[in-house]
Length: 366
Image: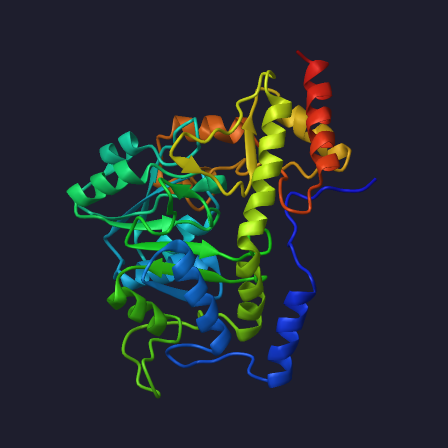
């Protein structure tokens, strides 16, 4: 039985060739303020693609989120507002700075932060909002930014899953003070591990460049606290070729997502939908249904890598249960969502197989 994984890197000989060049040159990493030549190429490609003035490459999406909070001076006594329905890294970076996470509920239609609940949970200690563009869906940045501005809050977009998603033609990662992207192996583009922060603020960009390199500006003189969060030249070499393919990758994902929508319409399933102003990158094609666990088991049994993100919301984990959270939509989503593979290695035949399996499974139960 041939398996259809939930995610798979879209590689060819070009990535191998670019990595070989780095290995042959011997410049595997670079600890200078500006970074190595491959890192700078990736940064240039990213800031142009996202439409910001600056981009800084790091070694993971988690590092990007962490460095963003450090650059804003977030620490003990500060509150950071974020959804519980996301990968745990979004909350982990908050607590490691010493700040307190405040969990905001999501909207049922797209699983992104609910601006109404956000407004209710702001206190005098609130400092940052982290909206997550989950599954490539786009958080309501217009309302979130207005609420943040009114309350003098910084906005750090968790765009780790949304490279290529746009609202009114504007890329995610360009709405807030900073946007944080991930190049993890399952993401739209990958360098194995890697991340990028985009921003229009030069001061923040320069602080992040110091933070990723132990707080050093030049020589051995430490200006601010920092860590080793650098992207290697090997990872940057992969990311460079991936960025050259990003438009093609997005086109294939869209084609697969549109095909799934056509084939699944009419079933008792909530399908993902773009509005007239939004274009998703289709990082994950996420549906919601009553018989989620039964359908998941059937799909997995025939080799389809359908996966639940996130069956356990962050506020339900042992570490974060102490913070408490009133997030009913989050808990509903955790019980109902299911993500299907639409990555570039998914063929037309695969899409038909996925849809047919779901239709047959639900047909026998409806």
